[in-house]
Image (cartoon, rainbow, N blue to C red; front, side):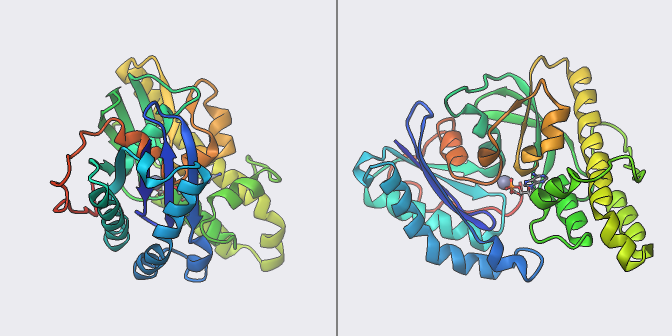
Amino acid sequence: MILGIETSCDETAAALITLEGEIRSNVVSSQADLHARYGGVVPEVASRRHLELVMPVVREALGEADASLDDVELVGVTAGPGLIGALLVGLAAAKAIAWSKRLPFAPVDHLHGHVASLYLQSDPVQPPFLCLLASGGHTLLLDVPDHGSQHVIGTTLDDAAGEAFDKGARLLGLGYPGGGELDRLARQGDPTAYDFPVARVPGLDFSFSGLKTALLYVVRDLPADELERRRPDLAASYQRALVRALVERTRAALEETGAEQLAVVGGVAANSELRASLPDAALAPPLLCTDNAAMIASAARFTEPIPYPRYLAVDAYASA
Ligand code: KG4
Ligand code: ZN
């Protein structure tokens, strides 16, 4: 089996998958509650929490898979991009485990991990395909020619889509991270109530910062009782604009590249309206869309492993 470890942001996660990509366990311990009162992830707080949780989470993953470290043949871990202190905790734990068992070691790119969520059983997607990766930290259009590589053909010029969801949620008085809550609130509202604009930038890139400002102005100018009454409509209209922007650019990329297959990954791929708007896209189940370690173990299958003992100097990296 492959042991995967993920600590790039505020989820401490460990998973075991088989060498064929079948999930045996997938444990995710979210720190969201810990960071909620700050309205965002506090890097130093995240690192300290990862330190407390990483070994218990690995133990839990082994237990759920009914396995021991003797069953592990490869250790895969997120090396970047992400919060540098948070990454270092997972990386050090993974090195220690691999070293102690003289195992090979695969440093995984977190974005490759999101794409590799599609390669898990039972219905793995086969490259080549065009991939929209929309998460809290990234919004990318990727050309994916094979299991081991991906090329960026579009990106956001400012906020990531998940970040735009979270900022909108915050303006509407929802918790952090608010993407999922905004999604639920939007179901009770009228998506045509407000006409929120989305910037159309040249090429296959995205821009979301203007949308957030548009919502800010509407919220600021509404009397408190009216705002309370219109929250579902605001959520629905805001989500509609965001999803439209994602879908339009993705369709343009499909046309431009002539790709025959489309996939959507990352936390925002859990969004119900986005999922409904791209009925022909391959989508991982929502639990594999948000950060987890099964996707990291999956990417490890397609990452050149470093044999024991040459990996102790492998470093984490904050940006792609
Ligand atoms: O991939 P992910 O777990 O972490 C990063 O790598 O960033 O993505 C987290 C993001 C957050 O911004 C969260 O609000 C958003 O995904 N998200 C959603 C939904 N579920 C999670 N956004 C919209 N609708 C959802 N249902
Ligand atoms: Zn992620």
